Image (tube, rainbow, N blue to C red; front, side, top):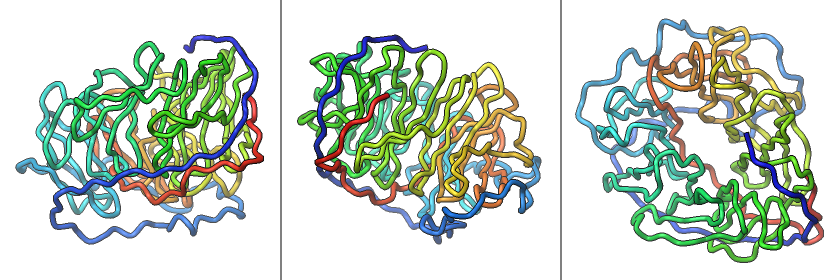
Length: 400
């Protein structure tokens, strides 16, 4: 549960913009692209969402990938339409969403077995927080196992950053040479920090040097901090931040000791809108590829968790997996393949250990089983282009 801090007054707001570098990798022969079910710009936003399943779901005993291949392991570029990666034993595998491509990407050392996070370019991964993996091989990330605050820089994953354990500074490591460490702090204390998908800007929650609590933005170097939203409730903590891929929205997850709430912060005018609230813990914000789309997890890991999705067609949260074989099981969001398809991890109970990986379709409510009984599944997709960070000169920060 979060710690409590004092409330303070509000500062002013301006705009930031920047850009980031690019990285290249050795390429292997790419398979034919898998066509998304629905292009991001074709997701309807004005019709009423369906309340019943209109497409059949797959057999829970018949996954697309029956067993991972017993082949040599080596780095491969991502499948153009995205792929699912997961761990079986001491190997990291990747598979296409239609099950026609499956390959071993890396034979893992014991310390490398853990959560996998792919960079925005999908060409580089963070393994169990402490290891970076790409076409050049594996190397230390410079961060310790268990640091859940480590995030990739945008647009190409040139660096990693996270608040230190005390929260007093924000540290950045170069992904190609993690021995290169830089202090990029712009707050007196930082509780959560992310990169803006347009590149060149970081967004963080915490307390400024003058004592003002809120959500701030600054350049990647930590310069020019600006207040985006003030925290005036002394009982409230911001526990997680996320941005939509287009770069115009910041999702804010907060806890005031009685409720968890998700707010949508529009950067253009700094308006704040509450999207949902729950007494049960909310975690794992997963923005979709369409503006305004978001998935999140509800519940404790000593029980069965639920995944909900903000459906822009109806404007209300929707529970993932209703009327499918995954209904009633413990479901966690992993990532979006496109505007309609959300990849989820499904277990009988809890949040950890082996899981079955399914694709749930927002439009027709169906669920497709990809692979069973794997560990540390995640989605490997190339981040779509984003607009640069920008805030109107006349925008006034809202308050939480």
